[in-house]
Length: 451
Image 1 (cartoon, rainbow, N blue to C red):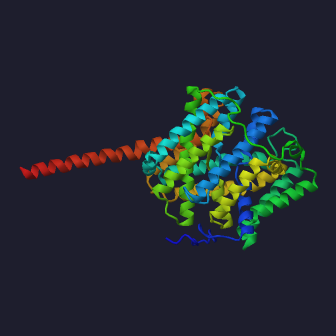
Image 2 (cartoon, one colour):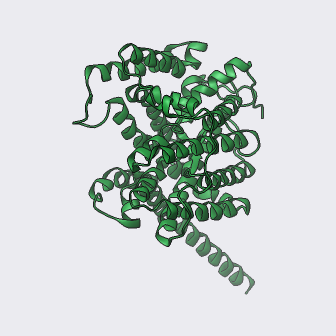
Image 3 (cartoon, rainbow, N blue to C red):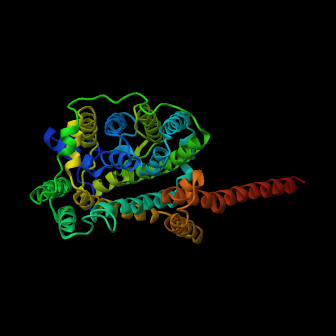
């Protein structure tokens, strides 16, 4: 199969998987991937919600950048070999925040390390790869759709400048920044041609930041406080093991695997590239190894980012070389904290304006995967029940605590496990029984004919 240039009937991908670009364009496309990912937002958000002191907050941000850079580069060059960005999964945000507020980051580190080691062993032995038949379009499409819906909540929080009651919430200046940024992304990605289309997110970011600067919305405080060079600390929170923390993170890991599988399927389908068992095995192993490294230096688990697949669709750039450039940029941002702090200059409304089209494309990607599922009443019921429970149940479980609280308040966890349970109960097991019954009937017929 020719991977150099793939074009769909709708010209979604203009630059193919193996197509090399001039160095300047490669770096700029890579920078665009950096800004669309959550790599620079998740650690800042989690550290702020926990209330970590500046030193530990900076260490968390640096460690995430470094882990994301290492894993993204290895994945793009050696393992899954697709244009996929790796970074902290939103599925772990609430768990890390809960652990941090309960002074349980040492136990969280232990849970992440053990969970990552188990997933790594399951990956390299091919056990997870053999479960590929379970990752049907019904399950993968449902999970990707719910990731988009989950990202929409964060996106609107940034887009509107916080929550009702916060200073500047939905103020004219906030909406001016967010709407302007979003309109530039939409206009250039949908109607632009050539470089205007492929650099739509980066152009919107520059325009949004320039507008924010003119309105006096840029905050340079974090740059002044950050060092020029720094290495992350080994096990900054200590290390303990608790069964409750381990089970919570292991469950979240399983969902991250399902999410990653959906991302692999979506990107390979978009690029018309075969998703082989070797690619899947290498991808899962790389993600778990990256999570292990991240936890050792104070970060949290990494996974494949679905919103960057949406970027491929909107810009038409499917080459994996800009992703390699993004990996190098992550490493620079992690080793030079002052450079990483530059990202914090981007105001929340501009971030929301960039993420809104990406989240919308992610929702559509989930729907397009679901469209490939067989049109049966059972599949309709699996998708409908999974989405209904995932969207509705968390609001009824806000007072739940422990592992149950972690599970019932996470829409991605609910949707993933509901769809898998229903798939097994309504499709896989009945088909297994039917095959067994058919085999028995065949043996009886052969016995009767012999007599």
